[in-house]
Length: 612
Image 1 (tube, rainbow, N blue to C red):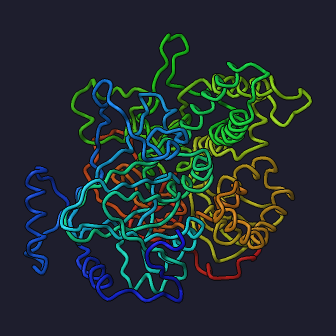
Image 2: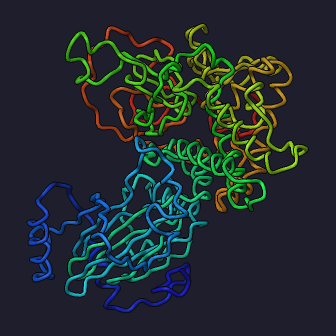
């Protein structure tokens, strides 16, 4: 984007007074309401605004028609098609992996935007590290759009800066001003889009659009590349989980179906045919899917309930299930409660019979961080038989080995030894299931204290407290993160392997220094979209993103790392279940009031490397 439009950086260039006044005026009126009006009335109203540009609020009301779905229509039979946009950036084009999703899971990214001058979008990133395309198809009275964009690699810096301003970029709640852009510690690129011009938005580029002049109509669509899937899986989805931004694009399912597609391509190609490109993509997808499987796997999978019925001739679609707390797409594993349901779900006695997948659902990442339903009685469930996913994965490996040396053991088979998954990736569902078992059998409450005889202590639910015999002390998950920089996934996994003996003692004592020394690597991995150390990244995200916006706050409780939450309470359905005392309302790490911060232990401001 260098050389396009106007560049504003830490030492901003000058901006022409006319352009600056126009943009400033638009940003000053950055207050809006939403509603529904007929498109004809919208056009009439917008044209009146053009005739009275100096009308001031509240008399002036400007509408912006955002994200209206449009259909693809084929031309008349025999008509010629003039290609003016390269195939690799087209909707469902050669580099769009979203086309591999089955019909039941298709994501609509082809949208129409219609706006008038002084309308805008908030500062935001496109979903799931997708690549954006925006083509201005129509304009009246010189209408145009100003785009404010950042480099993709600056995404972590942008987020950090907005946190200091009290805003969350991924919640799309803030419209930036020119003054804020001038003061920002990152470069901002500005381009004016006119009729017939196509704007390409890089993955993770934070951007804002301000319309100018008369009516403009733009066609917009998103693509998901293979690199985009990697960045989404390792970096964007974990952020969405923390702040509760709905995933929408079904990233894990997309990886799975893309792997299936390239498996068939490689299988159906003769060995003498050049297969470098599809084989390379398939290898990358297998590695990516291995990390997905590790997150979704538990060694107890054979004993869990699952939605699928292996005797059915037609496959069951699981694409409509999502986490009711953070909005994550459920690909394989989740926790479910059949009691905490909306009031509308209890219309009759028959409706009280909840089918698997139709209850209140939480993803493993939410559950392992202490998020739960109101009653706390959730059960682990899986969508498919785990063996089916392992066989699909091994089939892909077998296809690769048709064309490569059998001595290449980089990709092994997991069907016979699935526990090897936990050695290669981060077992989020495995840790969540261990936490579930602890909640079934552990005493109700324990004391979180930093040393033997310490007065700095507080009561906490027993499953969220881990002891250390050499330290003669115990600590809750909230304070393990604050003082030792350890995430609950790592704590549960390591403590389960070592018990509370010397191995666990050495691990938690060294953890904070390891985290501090890895900060540069953590940020560089995020900046460049590389695969990170996921345990360190989980701890980093839990420390960084402490505010969330749960989808169903009236039915759920925030977790150990949620210091505040945006809530709009609604009535909850009748339930005979009583809230279990594992989740008291007045202890750190389990806050019943989502919009308040957890109360820290006395002395929490002590040195971070204090012994347990």
